[in-house]
Image 1 (spheres, rainbow, N blue to C red):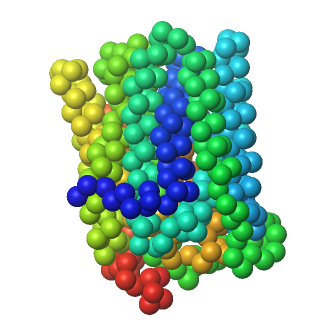
Image 2 (image 1 turned 90 degrees about the vertical axis):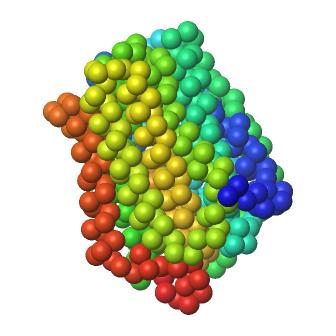
Length: 421
């Protein structure tokens, strides 16, 4: 049951993974600081939800184009360039906070630029793994990566939530800028990573060809669809600042309730990752994804109900809400590990970057859509009803999707070599 650490024997993967331990904490400080600063400036969940819109557009455009770039460029070079870009935008966040500009539009603009670099970096990073590791180690490697990322998701909110009322936002952004240097060091030391069978240029035609590839692979296509369902309807993070302040009595910026809500999903994912040794032995990966997403939806429903009952005992129902988010985080970690491994093991190297671009658009874009949808819906229906209703929709829609495309539920790992993707 304990996590499989075999991939860490590879020195290149080990350096990337170790650098992430440092970098992810800083990145999560920014993830917490941006919505907290926007809410502190505006006092509105709708404005916080705008981070979804400002993040979604560059994610879609640069995620797809970045995946195409990763199929024609040396992937090591692309990782170096985009990591430097992330460092520069983090410095921009620090400067606007240090100067006390208080402009929500500047903040959202910087966020959009950061997401553009992220959208190119992440498909490239994922496309590199199958060049460094054998296929049988990919589920374990993805679980290890997700565990580190989610561990940073615990430390970041807890530290950020505690520090914001004391230090303000600038120090959190500065820490992010400095910690990114660890990742830059790791990617610089990678070997050259040219693409096998690379042809053409990274233009619109290349992106369209990558999308067309999915039409002949319904299992991969459905892996994107079910994740969109889970994230768009079941990710209530845009509501966390308002829930922490209004329902659980925290301050308008930061605070313990705020930190616990943001840290809960990553905490559950870390626990799921620590005990992820079983993922390498699961053959029916499609069914496992469906089950994991159903558990996610039920957990988010429980979270919404706990928020709705907060008036009857804030401490007790805060604990229940955090537990439900942790349960959802563990389920989401399992779902993501399987979906990532299915994609990495099945795609040809010449299209792997483009498919990883689609993957990052779905994985990161879904929550951005959710930010806008949940922020708007909460203004009409309230935070509790929005969260609980979204969780119910996740369960219903993912079951409908599974019944509509049964080949996804029947998918087995062994079928990769039989052309059944």
